[in-house]
Image 1 (tube, rainbow over the protein chains, first blue to last red):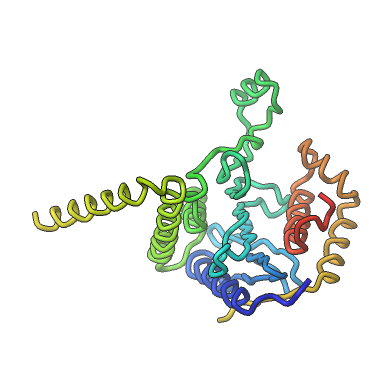
Image 2 (image 1 turned 30 degrees about the horizontal axis):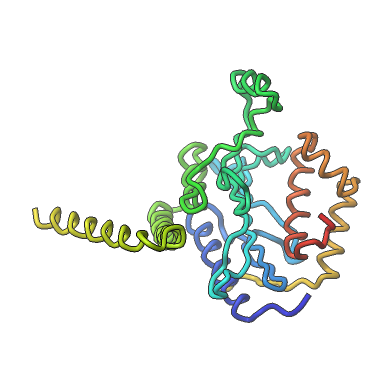
Length: 226
Length: 65
């Protein structure tokens, strides 16, 4: 194992700072978010001083009722200039038994549903259908596709979900921080999606994108002028 | 506040993985089979995820998979 590239360490540190700031300004005081770097690989998440992963407590009406697990496994992008997320996992967990409630996973190399939700609940209808399909019946084994590689849920979405659905205690100004982060995330993903279109169809893709941008710009100008 | 950035050595990562496997009391193969069959408890499942994170840092092929 060789020393990591200083640029990678700086990029990993910036990414960890962004994740830590998001959590700190929404639902968790001083989250222990950091990065672990080995060669060109990075894990960003919550861990103790020895590097062991820790889950972060979420409160509901002041009581510790849920844990949040956040983990990103990243490599340097082929351009060598930014981190590519190979796998991410956001999970809400029942603290006492460490039983997952819901997991929002992304596995870049997965053949289908690279971004998916796994809900740890039971459904007799799903069990029945799965049994008929010759598959294991547990509902949690379903990989519910969500947005694909580019438009998968962000950590902001998961935090908002925990607040909206479980009344997790939140901080003043949380909604603004969530919206700021989500806007940055979506812009990044739109740029990546544009690269996908051009890579997949270099002949007509660029012109198609230019036309879409022109139309969108015109439509916004028209609506402002009304 | 700057986040912590650790650069664990291969020896540290292997020792950490060994401790987690010892806590589980299973060989890597037994662990894979238990995970596939859904036989892991919540605690075991997350320990397995921790092991996979360490193996990610160790790099491809390190665990012989």
